[in-house]
Image (cartoon, rainbow, N blue to C red; front, side, top):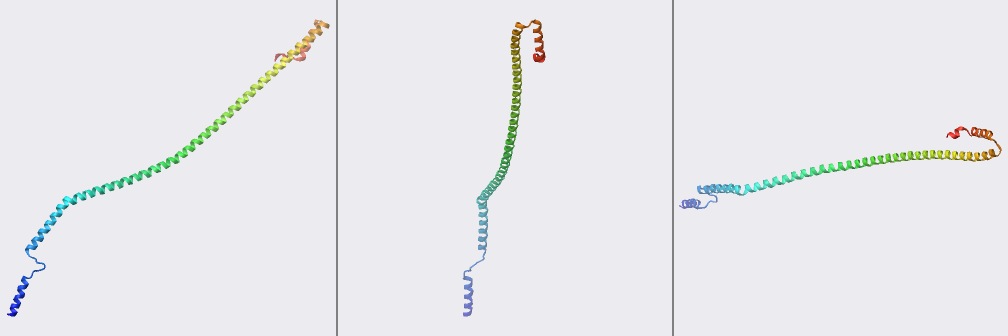
Length: 187
C-alpha cells in the first residue's frame, strides 16, 4: 500500500499542484479577448491619435520641403540676379568708356573746328588789313601827288606868271602830265 499509497499520493499531488502555464479554455479565451481588445485599442488610438499625428507630420514635412524648394529657387534667382548685375556693371563700364571716348572725339573735333575757324577769321582779318593798308597807301600816294601837283602848280603859276606866257605854260603842263603818266590819275 505503501507503494500504492505512495503512487496515489504522487498522482494526487501531481493533479493538485498548480502548473506554471496552464493551457485551459479560460486562458485561451482571456488571451484572445485581450488580443482583440489591444487590437481594438490600437485601431481606435490609430484613428484618434496616430492619424492626426501622421497628418501633422506630413503637413510639416510638406511645409519644410516647400520652404527648402522655395529657398533653392530664391538662391537660384539671387545667383541669376547677381550674374545679371555683374554683366550689367561690365556693360556699364564699357558704355561709360565708349561715351567718354565719343566725348573726347567730339571735343577734339570741336577744338579742331574752332582752331580752323579762328585761323580762317585771322586770315580774313589779315587780308582785310592788307587791303585797307593798300588802300591807305594808295590814298596817301594820291594825297602826296595832289599836294605835289598843288605845290608844283603854285610854283609853276608863280614862275609862269612872272616870266612865261600862256603857250609856254600849256606846253609845260602837258610835259609834266606825260612824265607823271596818265595811269597815276586814273587809279
